[in-house]
Image (spheres, rainbow, N blue to C red):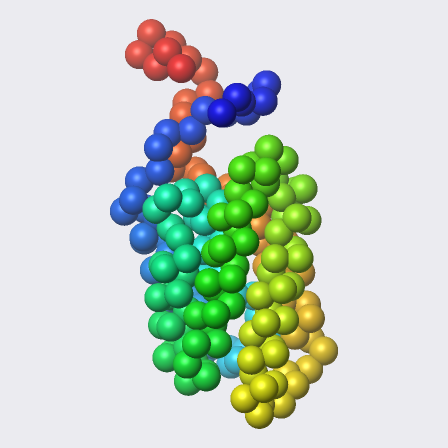
Length: 176
């Protein structure tokens, strides 16, 4: 892939760090669900953000199957309809992988704008599954969740790409 001028060369992603970040996001999601706000509908889904991030940046390591397994874990934790989160995360993973080549050509703020419809579609799909199962509408604040997840995209990019960044100034020991 041809790099844009000024784009920093990244080290290969460490698989241990990828899985640690996914498990940390799962744990944070679980803590936020039982924490101060309970299951507030406007709380962003951190696991969805991290899954989409790694599906975009490492599509060969994190794919639809991993998204499905983490979705099942969230379904079991929340006591939701089994497959609700799994379906939403699988759709997120599929579309993130399908657009990863195009998405990486844009700067991070533009990536966040392009990821917003992806998060909105996943939440709409999850809402439809909930409504078909007989659950009530969670409220209009539910529509803010994809916006908050899209706002978290630049922060996730900075944090999750930090271990891959090379030293900015090359010297005799670091030629790149």
